[in-house]
Length: 277
Image (cartoon, rainbow, N blue to C red; front, top):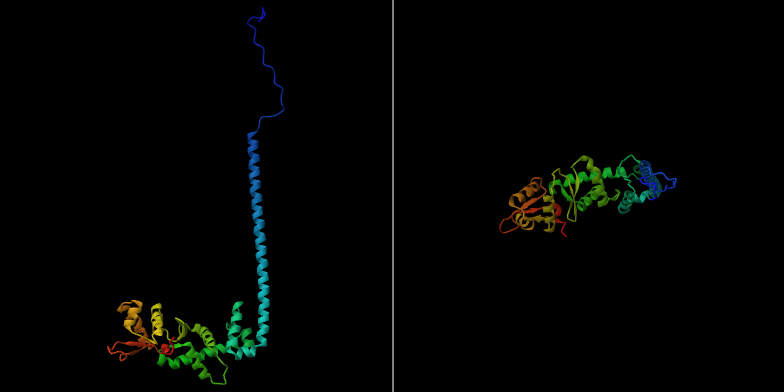
């Protein structure tokens, strides 16, 4: 250090040239990030809305196409019915096939006896009249079968009642007529037991236990015994009596005590005697 300069202050550090940059503004950066996030969400929502709208338009177009196809099918079906109405009236099998075609597009020619199909084919009145004949046949045979009759047997009886000159009917016609009788409540209804179709014309409510006994009777040639039910179904004596008693009360089953040497009761169901597999 030169003489005479003792105690002098040390030289200052060299000045740094300014760069022109400002320190980062953290608040502004946060705003920019937030803005970018909101914008992204808005774009995603807009894309979803656009996709949803496109899906709705596609669905509407598909429905419109299907409606047009069904309309065309219905018109063709009407032309078919008008062309073959005589055959539909006279031929039971052809009539069944026609009904099956109607079901595929949700048309019920039996829905009303005053609608278009009734006026074209007369099927509405036909099935209502057939329903009355079905009830008559059930009433005539109730004292013999207790109100339980096989569909084929009932159809044959109705055919005989109608006479040879009447329009032919089939089991399918009888079942459709029974369906029209549903407005009467539990008066007449179809009952399926195993592979047999029965018509019940008494108001007795049959449970699954009753149908199980009927199925067992069908396999046994038309009858059951308490011992058979106990062995095959594993029921108690009380349960067996609860199920069999209503059959006897309503005459749907008859008792035969002479069928076995032990005098055991055999419960015979007339409607199943001829329905042996």
